[in-house]
Length: 234
Ligand code: CTP
Ligand code: MG
Image (cartoon, rainbow, N blue to C red; front, side):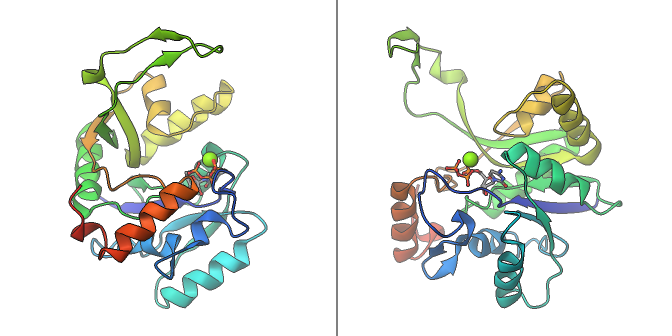
C-alpha cells in the first residue's frame, strides 16, 4: 500500500513561549522538525512528505528543509488556526495514489521506528490506529472549582501520542464529519472514533513525549546529551 507522511508543524508554540516557531527550535543544534523527520528516514517515508507550516513562515521552513535534506521532495502546506485545520489542509495535499497516511507531530522528535511500523500495520488491518501509552499516574477528573469529581479506572486509560495512522478514505470522512458538525478535537484518531469506527491503540514509549513546555525542551536536550533516545532506557 502507498504510505505518505504528514507532519503538522504549523503551531505557534505558545506554551513554549519562544520567538522561533517551536518546530524550528534547535535541539542539540539541529531543528526539532529535522530530528523528527530523521525518525522516518530509515523506513523511506521522507520522499513526498507533507509538512504544514505557519502561513507567514513558508519560505523559512522551505529553506531549513532544503538545507538538511537536499534531495528530498517535500510539500510544504499552509497550516490553519487549529491543529485540526492544519491536518485537514495536509490531507488535501496528499498524492492521489496514497492509501495510508501517517500523521506525526513535529513536536515528538523521539518516536521509535517500531512504533511507526506498528501503527502502519494496525492501520492496514483496522483502518485507524494511534500510538499511545498506558498512564502511570492516577488521573483525577476535577470540576471548575478544583474539587474532585471522579477517579477513572487507570487500567483503561492511555495517554495519546502520535503517529496516528489511517486509511486515507477513513480519516478524510472523519475530518469532513467533524467540520460539518463544528467539532474541534486535539487529535485525529478521536475524530474517527466519533464517527463510530474502530481505532487500534498501539503501544508507544515514554520517550515519544511531546515537546510542549520549556521543561520538556530541557528534558529533550538532556536526552540528546546522553546520546539520544536509544541510549536512554525509558
Ligand atoms: N500544529 C499545527 N497547526 C496548528 C497547531 C499545531 O500544525 N494550528 C502542530 C504543531 O506544530 C505540533 C503539533 O501540531 O507539531 C502538536 O501541537 P502542539 O504541541 O500543541 O504545538 P503548538 O500548537 O505549536 O503549541 P501550543 O499549543 O503551546 O501553542
Ligand atoms: Mg497546540
